[in-house]
Amino acid sequence: MGPSPQSPAPQAEPRQEHTPPETIEAEVVGSAEIDEGLLWKLLRRAGRSVARPAIECLELMLDANTPLQVRITMVAALTYLVMPLDLIPDFIPVAGFGDDVVAMTALLGLYRSHMSEAVRARAQRRLDQWFPPVR
Image 1 (cartoon, rainbow, N blue to C red):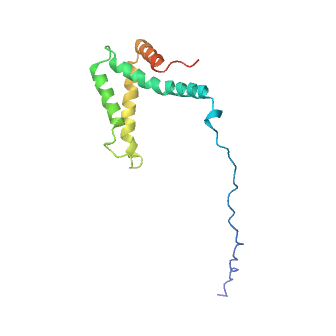
Image 2: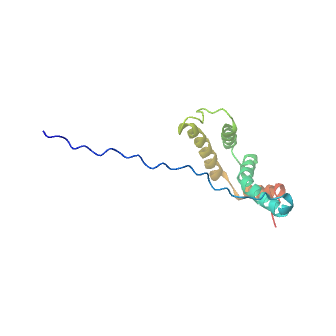
Image 3: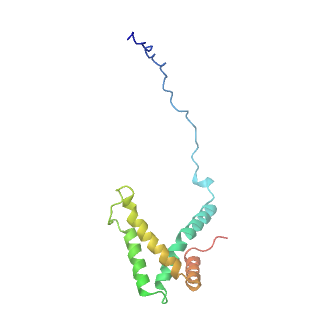
């Protein structure tokens, strides 16, 4: 066998200097420049959209026509979701949130199958009372 061809020695890449990111000047907005009325409208709208499903679940649990077993299951699922201790700790990848997904799925299934227009109307009245509509 003849001599093996040698590959050329790798050349060092040119050294690039680290340049700091460009500085952007920003001005802090003072409270005098914020339209507080507009801010409160935005917060009320957000509050209404977040509170609606919670108030509907509350009205569903308080409704006399909702079976006792459904009420107990809803309370158990809600309690499990807000408790800091889980059956499977949340820091375990994938499986950690699996038990929470099961509780949420049970809650949503009960919500969908037992929600009535009467309950929804009572929830709407309570929502309007707690979070007045934005005009």
